[in-house]
Image 1 (cartoon, rainbow, N blue to C red):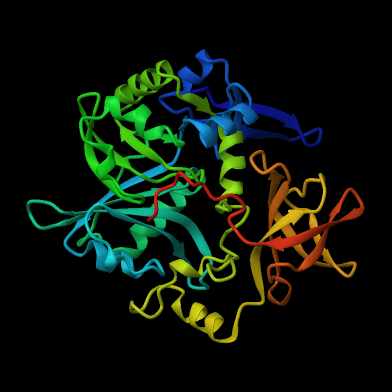
Image 2: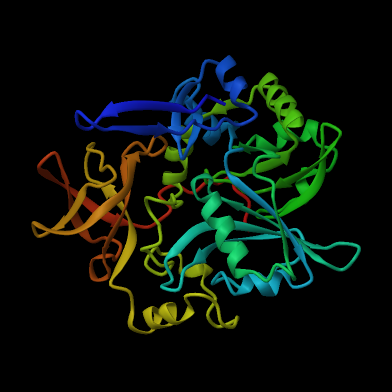
Length: 391
């Protein structure tokens, strides 16, 4: 951990004001990235590798073989209590009562306006020997503190115990068509028993661990939560058998090809799940009241005014975050994420546009450096893996 840096600057001749630069946090695997001469960047208060051998090669490794990501910066909460499911039901639009032990649900925490506080994955572990329900929630790194405060203020802490494991555990994502084959030698249990969005408590390198068949790349793969010492050994072991270390750059290009939302860009507290084209995780018909329900009911009844869509640029020009979307020379929306799809070979993007202009096939334009370039609304995801297991 770097020391706190304080820089003094003069605002006028008589006053000195301290400008405080907070230190960047580092994961327990940070030194391994340094050893591999990774290019580093600041991300959500963390010093993280953006690439190791190049974004293109890392992207290709995940699509064709196997790559691994240090995602230890993400928030990790272990939860337990007799009323765990019923307590969480009030905070998310998804019906968690449908979950069986060893199943998971991607969902969102909502504010009263149905804005997305964060997108999360809840892993239901079933009941322990005392009959209490157990589960794990993984949240975004930059929102860990906000999410923890929201959960603590909206759960009955006499009914639910929340343990923050964020600084205690390493989280490694192993992704790609060869992920299972690469990881299996280091896991005692048979990975084939884990279905997509399934998980189990397993033995990794002789130590108790948690393994989920989830990820953020659009490929089959696993996320492994272990003690730091085990994480270091697992990373080195996977590297020795040819798994390619990957950074945030490839993680972003991979997730965008799979049209997976990035919190803070594609979704935030000003967007609802219906606007963000996440209607599949809103279960109004099968669950009771929850925070933001009335807003979602109204939006479902009268429709949303805007919707997140996928765009394919009609050329080689890349639509970047913040670029304006046009229709008949009028500004009608904004790009939230955009990149050159390394797998497909053409630029793709996500953008919010008026609902009446959100249909697949709709012709639009994106303003890039003062000039309008054609784009078309297309189905999402842009890329769908043939290797990924069905949920």
